[in-house]
Length: 335
Ligand SMILES: Cc1cc2nc3c(=O)[nH]c(=O)nc-3n(C[C@H](O)[C@H](O)[C@H](O)COP(=O)(O)OP(=O)(O)OC[C@H]3O[C@@H](n4cnc5c(N)ncnc54)[C@H](O)[C@@H]3O)c2cc1C
Image 1 (tube, rainbow, N blue to C red):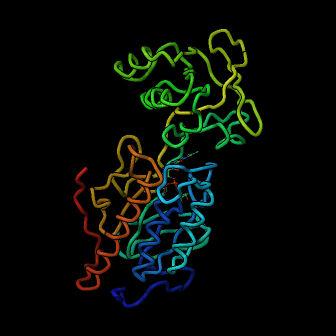
Image 2: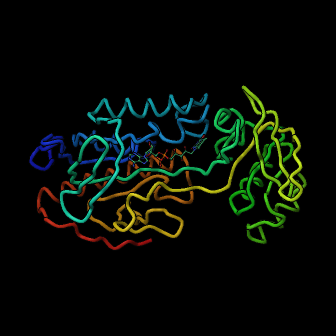
């Protein structure tokens, strides 16, 4: 079936490339969107950004994605996603979107290497968990340092773990971790929590949870695996080591959506607002995965949103081919 707009697929002129589907981001959402668009013969181009494969490529093993009963390495998994999309004609470019103009058709996306004129854009720029930026953190990410309890909690059965943070997500994740861990120590830089009272009570009543107040982690200790953290008292300045098998960092999450400020609806936390069909407020522009999802933040949910966004992009292109409006139509968001 060929319903492409005058078969343009990917035409290159004067450093500009005309594409039907431009996917911004190469994480699970982006590569899944690319797979669906490629299987509709739309030759999607994927801008990989700085992190080919996205966040999950950082993790050692993924055990909660169906189809891999023995688990799969994060990097290996997204490599498979990429191969599958490429098999049907998706093109992954090692390039980053630097500027967008979504106010007229075709939609314009500038990158370090050129400019794309796109009939549809699927935004899957993901989010970045905030880091402590202390020695040992980067080196041991996926080897004891984690930003996702749902993903990695299971690996800490009967182990001692530290949770860093004092907000709702830190406490929720700490409580979740008590299903597996022998003990959970919450390290918080102040002497009171930002989290809601009910959550605070639940955490304080949990016999596996203890708190270290007025303390920050200044170093993560270990090598192949984590064996401790160095803590600094924010009041006295005193430093000490605390033995632990894992460090879960929940000090916030930042969606990568600055590029779209002023052009798309963005909520107060920085997430793109989409309706349940992944539409943004600009017709032909869709968003999927963690850039538009403050809740689930998993590979499977991001991939699912990516598939849904691509299905809507395909539908949009079909409609355009039969009745082509020349200016972007604002779609009312339902969120
Ligand atoms: C350490 C760790 C372990 C995890 N483990 C698991 C697990 O076991 N199971 C699980 O289900 N989930 C896990 N997660 C969560 C999972 O990784 C995310 O939910 C998922 O990767 C989100 O996919 P995404 O495609 O929406 O965005 P991301 O994976 O964040 O990808 C965003 C993509 O956008 C690109 N990008 C950003 N800006 C631009 C730009 N301007 N131009 C072009 N490209 C751009 C980036 O380069 C990247 O490729 C883990 C997360 C972390 C951090």
